[in-house]
Length: 592
Image (cartoon, rainbow, N blue to C red; front, side, top):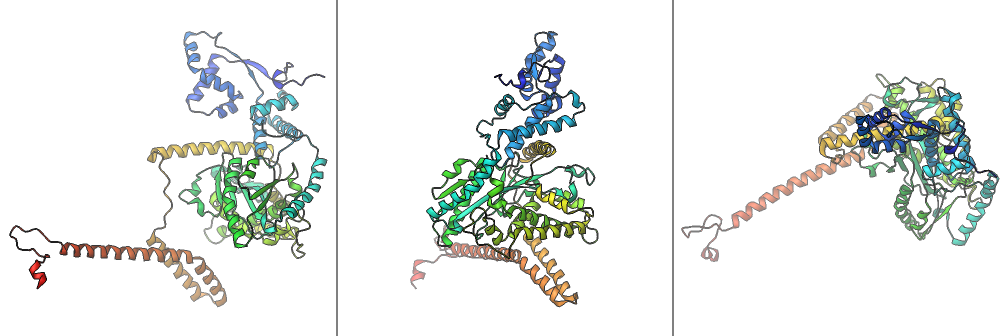
């Protein structure tokens, strides 16, 4: 049986070739480093491996000395150059694996690698000259080593085994529930999805920087969202949002704890093992408090998929919390949140986004749809996420467990997630046409909603990789600006000036009074005015508290001054004549 050879050792000429770099080529690479270009950017521009580039960079002094002496034969080094298509394919494949929600099989990785490579070859200027790629076992072994995927378990189980596991797993869970005495209030599921908040209906996107016309390929700026709730639907936990920037401009000056979500940061915008551990440590006190209010014992069962970002160590965080991981590759089949919850959330998210777009583009001198989506930022996306998650009903969260716990879930005949989803899609289509997307059809809405769960294409992966590189550049620029301004000084939180707040509330009140005085429909104006006043009550309360504190501070200062003066009047003053000074009393006078 012949051994599988690594692509690096292929002598046929179709694999890796040796190339000798001249001194001039090495000097040009060194100049790129001296211009502060990043290694990954140079690699993409030249097709040279990053390890080779780093070796040239580290030997820059010797190379420059050699160039001065004119000796080229010694310094010219024969190095092995891997085809740039393979290097790019591996880079995109690593991003795809990191974003997978469950551990994957070797055959799945091989198929994705071949698919990415075929796309890159097709886009190449000379496809016929691109070396063939077979995704052999030798390549796979080297790929795992190069990208440090040693700890990932790549199984070769077939899909039939996965379906069998999906059929058998619910019985195992129900047996555990019966033995341990868990109630539906004590059983939780957590799941993640991706939101492309710059995505518009009809395959239109908003270009980064807004320089391209509507319909041009654009940045698919995305974030990862984790949701959690119990099987009764009685407790919905605050969503977790993971974004690629720790301090995006839209959130500067905002206290992140006030966002309505748990905001976290990772370089690629994925959920990570460390974020997962940290966030569950924050969830446990909330769940414990809920159990206390319900007079339940704090013993919790959490069912979650076996994604690499969900490390087994989370099961050790609390002895009263038991984690059960879904069998490999069964997530789409039996994951509770996958049975309508995530689909409804995405539909609600799209519906609220379109409503916000209509509100922004209506009336005179209003902005266009393109201008609205250019303005759309992470803060707006978070606000819509919070509202859309609130739209997901208790009945939906409860019924989603029907496949996992068929014997424990009450069937709501009047609630059918698919029917509800169909209604929301129809509403989204009407809203899209109302705002100006005339050519949008049902299929466009379906694609938009299914985008988050579909496998990422080669183009998607390239845009994610490019977006991450741009994000790192933006963060570097922000760090440099902070250093120049105030030697990395902390961002000042946003402030509501008391006088301006009072003025704004006064203007709003005058406008509300105008509506009441001029609307012939008294019921309409009453409902609208009452609703706005009710929503403004937190600001009125804030203004009242500030004025009360300001008045109290003035009184405190006044009485402090009065007390100080009285003490000064009572203190004896020294006198050279022996006659008591003003404010002092002699003993004889005191006795009289």
